[in-house]
Amino acid sequence: MFNVRFFMILFVVATPSFGQDAGWIGVRVADQPDRGVLIRAVEPNSAAAKAGLKSEDVIVTFDKQDVIGVVQFARLVRETPVGRAVEVKVGGKAA
Image (tube, rainbow, N blue to C red; front, side, top):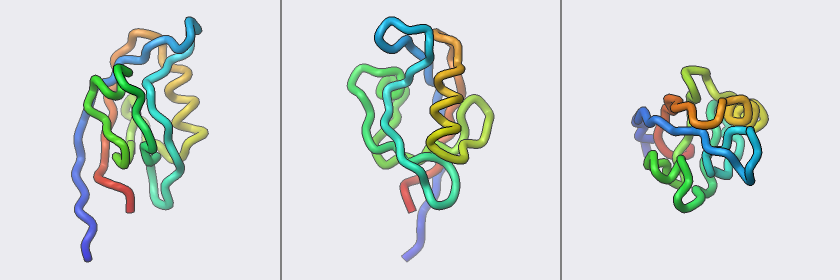
């Protein structure tokens, strides 16, 4: 069986979470064995949902930076200024 990979570029706008000044896009993620993070769940009406991200997508870049794991991804999102649009590259489904 072969693994079909595709790349999709989405623009996500970081939104405030619970009135804080930290970025939040509305996904729960898990580490991937290769690269990127696996989306486990997408919050309804979140920036991620509005951008078309789906459960089981794999985020491989965020704001033109390679995503290497959950901790680094969380830092990238948290450090994104609220209201800023960023490019997110999704690379296929989980391996």
